[in-house]
Length: 407
Ligand SMILES: [Zn+2]
Image (cartoon, rainbow, N blue to C red; front, side, top):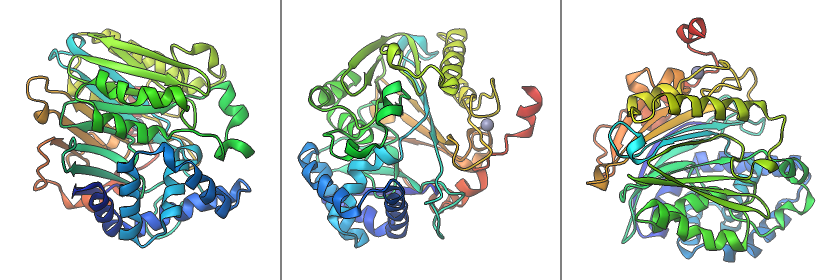
């Protein structure tokens, strides 16, 4: 995964085209990795593209325009880009840990939101623009005509978000939930035919349409009642005062309103607990540790505290700690993190602070993280954050030594 910063504006087609032009090599590498994964599962490329076209109607016109723009900008075919967007989450699900201190449960009285983005690596991620067998990601800032401005982290070529913030002061994140049913269904034969929604696309949809967390959730709930997410998982939205957490599996849907309270999610359900796989130790450890940290600091959570939580190595450092480390690229480990601080009075001044690389390294190095508000100034972005070099430097599975001694 190489992280880059990218600013795009205009109509959705233009936003896609700018992304396609600027990231054509990254997009091609992500597409190659995607098709390798499809092949490894014994699926036929043509069949996958045909099925994606059948599911096109589940996508909003804005997203389809953007996908078309990316395809034209990167000189890739639309059916190929569409298939990548439709099935990205099915083949490369987003793992992750999310924490929030909503409203009065933070030190400022306005919500502070964290996401650690974790991902497995793959043998299919190879080539000059890939690194350590990880997916190429970008930090995307979009300013669409007549729509909400958004800054978030995405995979190159994908219109979906891993995490993000809007100029209306709404933050979002997500996690896959490792349920018993997921193990059974996974990417089995009929999985590409199921009418299902991409979780990251729903995040984007909610941020674009909502002026607060409730509206963001309301924008996507009708479609979730009709079709499930492609894999079981959680979607979190938060504004200055409250959060909304949606848990969705194939046939179940549950919602939690987090008002002046703390909340967390790892790769498991809380409301739909009965569906969880019982042997997923990492998700259990991370959820308990998140709750412990948030309860201990209730009403005292600051951006700095959330950054500390993001680097937490209790139960590790390893796959079971919040800052996740591994010994092989195929393990799920933390690749980046973002802390969002919502300004209720002036939502455009809400801030997203993004660390590129392993949280315990990247948060401590000035060059590896950056804070941006939603007015979207571009002048202060260091070169290393734009060209991927910083991520390469701070992405290491080796835990920070001082932390190892402490734990
Ligand atoms: Zn760490």
